[in-house]
Image (cartoon, rainbow, N blue to C red; front, top):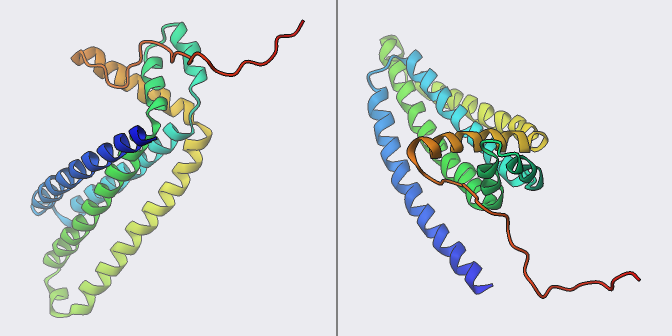
Amino acid sequence: MFSLLRKSLRWSVGIGLITALIAMILSLSSTTLMKDFSWQGGLIVLLIIVGIGIVFDMLGIAAAAAKEQPFHAMAAKKIPGSKEAIGIVRRADQFSNFCNDVVGDISGVISGAAALVVIASIMRSFPVWQETTWVENFLNVFLVSVISAVTVGGKALGKSVSIHFANHIVFQVGRIFFFINKKFHLSIFHVNKKRKRKRGGFRGPRAN
């Protein structure tokens, strides 16, 4: 129990620091790049960021809902991506934590910053609106509301899809990792052997 707690604590601290670093870098880079975009281009980038958050939320839920056993049959047939899918299911807690929490929170932070850049771009495009403050306030509230609605609605729809097609989604992700591992000689989520059963477990009485 203490070993599991220590391992979980080490993972939590590490992933928290990585999240803070990635969020800071991406937030600064995205807002800097979007300053040169028109408000239409900035709005498209904003929707892409929200979409990325929704997709990764689906991946995290699919990993938690997927069953490991079907992938063993696929691995026995040496189907590419099946062993990576097994690795994803076995590490579903870490995989879903990265997809749902890390990418999800980062996309939320970046989308908020990107929304401010889009609003500023809209105000520059229409100088007449700069004379009144209520227009900027309205755009701020409206855009944040739309982003929230799209995010929540998209994740709600994504959850239903992820739960019903969990194994298929995980297998497709496993195929992507298989390609990456083969291309760059890595072993991300790759599993070589099945888990060994522990000896000394309780055995029921044999039938005569």
